[in-house]
Every structure is written in C-alpha cells, then in structure tokens.
Length: 357
Ligand SMILES: Nc1ncnc2c1ncn2[C@@H]1O[C@H](COP(=O)(O)OP(=O)(O)OP(=O)(O)O)[C@@H](O)[C@H]1O
Ligand SMILES: [Mg+2]
Image 1 (cartoon, rainbow, N blue to C red):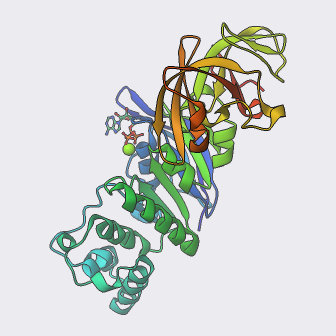
Image 2: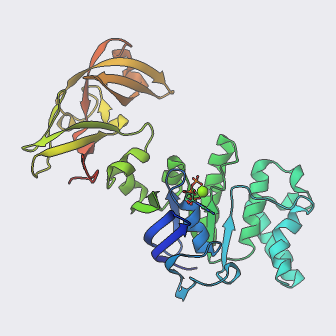
Image 3: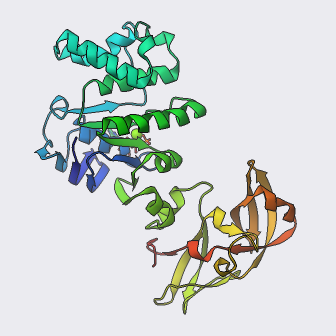
C-alpha cells in the first residue's frame, strides 16, 4: 500500500503542455478518479505515475520513495488499459501468469496467485479458454487479473470499462469497487464519464487543460463546485447557468430577483441551478422556495420516475427534473410557475468563473 504524491509535475510534448504544474496527493488505499473532457491530460498523468512517460519537470513519490526517474518495473504499479490487449494465442491462465513467468516467479507460487485472482474475479472456470472464447466483460476481468497477480502497491486504470455495453459497465463498476475493498491498494481510475466518477470515486479530481480544477469527495464536487467549469461538467442534465448581476445582496436579471446570502460588491455573476432544484411551487419545503417565476413548457421527456422538462424562461432555455407524479400540472406549450431551491443555488463570478460564497 502506498500514498502517491505528485509535486509540480509538468509534461510537455513539443509545444503541447499536457500537464501543467500539477500537484496532487492521493491517499493510501483510496479510490481516486481523475475525470475531465477529452485531451485534458488524464492519461498523461496516469502514464507519468506508471513511468511510461518521462517527466518534463517535477517529482513523483510512491510511499516514501522518489520514483521520478525509476523504470516502470521498479515502481510496483500495475496498469489496466481500455484496450486490454490479451495475447490471443495464450490461454486465460497463461495471460494472467505471463508477467510472473517473465519475472521467473516459482511455478507453485504462480499457480497459487493465478487461482486466487481468478477466484476473486469469478473466472476460475475459464482458465483453459483462449481470449476469443470470452465475452468482453470476461476479457476485461482477465486483464484485471493480470494486474492483480503482481500484488502491486498501486493500481492505475485508464477507462477500463469503456469498451463494455452499458449494463455490463455498471456491473463491472461494482465488481471493481468490491475488489478494491478486498485488496486495499491505492487505485487511480481515469474516466471522461462524470457519472462513473461520481459513483466510483472516494475522491474525484476534475481536470481541464492539464490543470486540476477541483479535488474533493463526490458530495463536495457536486454540491459545492469551486468554479463554473466543474459545476457545468459534473451532473446530467447539466447545471442551468443564468447571467445577471449581484446587487445589494440580490441576484437581479431581466427575469428574476432572488435574495441571496452573498455579500460583496456589485458585479456581473452567473447563477447556477441544477435541474432537480428547479421545481413546481409546493414541492419543496416553503422556506426553501424562491419567489415563483413564469416559464413556458417547451418539451417534456419522460424517463420513468422523473422527466426532463425544458422550459423557456425570459428567452433562455432551462432544464428541470420533475417527478412523474407532478407532470399532470404541466402541458407542452403552456405557461407554468417555477421556483428554485434556495439552499442549492450556486453563484459564480462572471469574469473569473470562481464560486462566490
Ligand atoms: N505522445 C504524444 N505526443 C504529442 N501530444 C500528446 C501525446 N500524448 C498526448 N498528447 C497531447 O496531450 C494532451 C493530453 O492528452 P491525454 O491523452 O493525457 O488526454 P486525456 O485526458 O487522456 O484524453 P481522452 O479522454 O481523450 O483519453 C492532448 O492535447 C494530447 O493531444
Ligand atoms: Mg485518455
């Protein structure tokens, strides 16, 4: 087991600065998820930890050891990739054992470690098969087995589930988390899927442009996003963003006036409201409702228990997530009153995008 520490890590590819002065401590035994849009530097960060990329500047520590210039094989790190590339001509057993055989680990020990990993992953009955005789999910388990048998201090996962269909992906998330609890090693998991990040991470690190935007628990990131980027990236449907002005403790726009508990000088701001915090009057506890405003119902998309309702509020589209049992109060093309949850309003500076408290 080991803590991972990145100190002022920079990685340049020619003129592309993929990782910019990144400092991050990943707690021993945690399941930390790096999430962000394509090209934000997630894979590069992971490959730097693994030693698969040479660092431009900065330091990386695993446990007490400065591994900045160590070879990948000397870091006791195992990485599972998106395209897990099993050897097609080898059996499952041989695929899992491959790294151990290369290291000349004694045969009985290999046998014991392969059996244990296969049992954990529920693939003990598949050891004699070739990869082409396996489903996608089973192949992914074999790739994970190959990582487990090495007893690494650190597991690095780069979008390992993205080749699987939606249902299997959800199942494998749970499997991976169970496995993580059992093994107790530090895990760093990369995904561009914000839902995967929310459901899997003890800690989420949101990246954009090679820079960490926020590190926190899923709750902190969702309910207290530090800036407009994090607020808009995490959550689906995305947070509504309304432009206006902060004036004498009120948010003021053409359509709205909402008293806020934020002090500070008058300035342009963005009011963020998550779709589930846009409601019909009488649904929230009364003290949490903002004064009602009139909006036109454009589209109602039923998901089952809830619906995504697109509303036109003074020329701007906003989305609400409304429970199915309240839908009888709404009709496409007609007007309705809506309120916001006062305790769930987010305010950002319009220029810097930083959260205002
Ligand atoms: N070997 C390389 N040579 C040049 N540029 C690279 C190289 N690898 C990555 N980059 C660039 O570095 C930036 C970060 O890439 P990286 O692969 O880390 O992104 P990512 O967050 O993993 O994205 P994705 O979600 O698409 O996998 C991108 O602009 C990418 O084009
Ligand atoms: Mg990547």
